[in-house]
Length: 259
Length: 219
Ligand SMILES: Nc1ncnc2c1ncn2[C@@H]1O[C@H](COP(=O)(O)OP(=O)(O)OP(=O)(O)O)[C@@H](O)[C@H]1O
Ligand SMILES: [Mg+2]
Image 1 (spheres, each protein chain N blue to C red):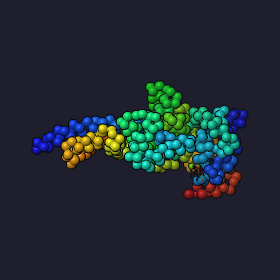
Image 2: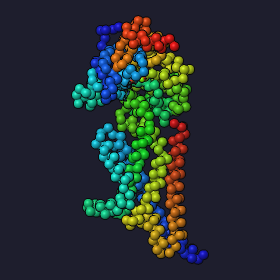
Image 3: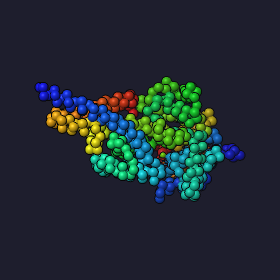
Image 4: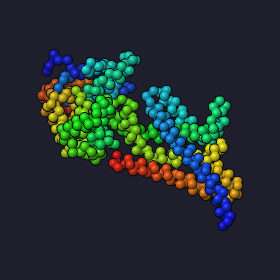
């Protein structure tokens, strides 16, 4: 691993609680450009919360997240952090895209309109340019034939591929995936994973919360196992799957791998 | 028969004159109430507790007191505050405020029914809040609430009849005057009822068209 490089995402001492409930207790992690990191762990261990903190869909209680020179700080530490965080988040979101379990396409817009919306509205790109780029991206995810369809007319797998194209249209450096295939019928999982594999190959930095152990072990450079608000295993797929250090991880793998 | 023609020839022109004012009041109030409802509804979902509080108090006041009391209060209250508006102006103002309180509640409940992920997807792509509300949330909300909003605006037309108590010469006031001249309450009230009904049919027709246009694709 390129230790000399500066990390693209650096999380230090991050904690997050909802009132009394401590969901993330202490997270320290550095993520480097081009890495594909799979985040796995039992339900309720804080995987989604961790991901959502990275692009400020959730505030963090303490610690800090540095992305591209922008810093999000714990709101319990100083009052003015909230305002500063919002400003930092605006910058961070330019470089960090997110793909959701439920796709979250906008149902009142066509596939094409979903993809060109943000380039036109935020980056002020001219419509014809935005459409050209969008069609290229839709082609890349195999959805150019459905450009004029509305999301409710598509299968889950198709919607998720469009959602990926929509994210790519903003040209992010990092994409966060929160269980991108969990809401899909099994027959559609493969097509979405294929698109993600393509991105990984092309060098995209990706953090993927997933229950697809196949994807985690084949595609990712690195696997993080979370439990109880900590990252308790962090290494190559080989290290984490074959030789987990913790009993919690061993138990988890014995449960899910033997079914 | 001659009698009937006589009554009709006197009362119908009066009713139509009232109708035109009723239409004017209703259209203005519906437009203002829609804008007002958007504004108050927007305040209701504000992260700023003070802003939200102001909106909640506004809604409480206008929803929890009788409309007739509000009309009288505005009619006598505004001049005593040094604000001199015509009865027509007062009527449109109070009907707009009253309706916007209801419109705000309808809008807010509509917005709350949109899945949170719709907002988050836009936020994660870097869209600022106001833009998300206008381009992602509101269009979906409006589609959903067209029926309840229509019901409210039909109510607005009916409520405009109460403005007769402050000398606004809308259709209900003209109805009473026509009865005073012709002494044919049954006939005149039937005519007035039919005209109100027709006016609301127009509103429902327009609303139906809007719904149809939006629902080409079922969400
Ligand atoms: N908005 C919220 N308010 C209060 N508690 C929350 C909120 N969001 C999540 N939690 C709690 O935080 C904990 C971690 O949730 P999170 O969604 O991060 O888990 P997860 O690891 O993604 O689980 P899963 O695999 O089921 O998606 C859970 O106990 C959950 O109930
Ligand atoms: Mg989750």
